[in-house]
Image 1: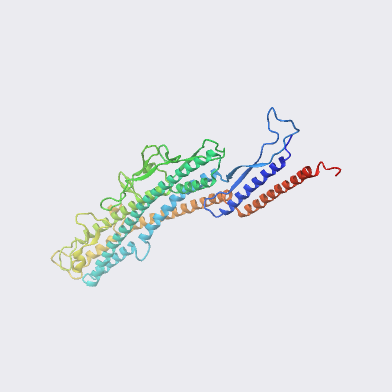
Image 2: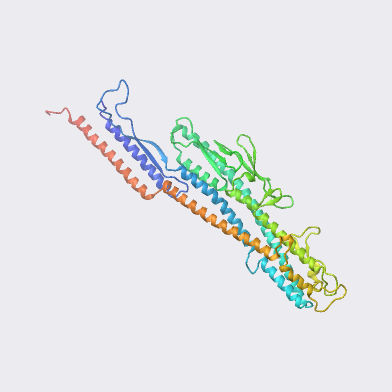
Length: 513
């Protein structure tokens, strides 16, 4: 025999469950603008029918429903879309960083413009042409020398600026490494909190969201794979459990970065990217202090070419057998090579000429520190020549026999503009520089295109994820009305049952009164 008050209990469950749904709707609306928040829903399920199953259970024509209950509160998420998002975020992190590094380099080189090295060289060659026509003219001699100073200072400025940006990239690598370590620690801490809640039968949806935000951020830096380990106890079947994060490698087995509430610690190799002489040290790889005390060193070549961290390394410079390679080391090497070829060529011609007094020509360009080879950093106009324009060897007359109007050596200096050099692979100074700038421009365009394409793909995936997980106020308002009406209907049912009980309690057994 069913209970007289069974209807009250059935509809009380309805009230509570619809109330939970309304509260969840309110939680969704409150977090409509919260970054990383996933909308939640109450998974309602019918409670066990009456009578229960058992040998002593009474027999009836069928089960009578006993109401509803909230089975779980689940966030709406698609793990496949999350995986796609992190893959694209990984690529975008690489190309964004690469694009920024190239853009900074282009800003320094400033080509083509009226103030770049190309313009300084052009003015230098032109002033030598003018000098060849008027070799005794003091103004023409001073202009040629000062244009030589401008070329040397352009080399110095570019080298110094590129080196400073390279140093900044090294600093950014250190900051990124700290960010990665912080993210790993936060993920491990969230794992700890989640595994404390789940065994009690709860779904810590907001903790899941916080952890996914950290995983998304981590995927911008390095390529990761994630796996979930279910919690024990009374954990629900849909509970996610603890996440294990591993670093994907091009060669070798993946390295575990987070397992449970433990996290690894990353450091660059070498640890300090600046040596005692304040020079930038190239990177060899990453050292990982493992979770179980298992330290490992990942070589740069073993890292996949994705993620901001790898891009920063490729721009900053990596140690190879032949020396440091990378975007900035390569450009500095090319500039040094060009500066050395330029200075040696001009010096060789200048030293074969004679100055205004018929003396053998000396160095046109010198180095700032004696004994060093020419580089873009140390090239300068010889101090004696800069202070005395008569020392400019514009003539090819025999030593001790100055010839008025002889500007043939100045013409030879000017002709060096179009002379191919073996040290530059058969290119002239200008064509070599133009090829360097051209290659940089082509790479810049390619990188920009890849960054745009990857950003577009990421935007599409993000839009798709938002269509699944984000809060739609229109939808929530509809749900709010739906749950409110269901709540009202349950309350009305209680009123109906109350009236029937009133009839039984107060209306029965009073016949004949």
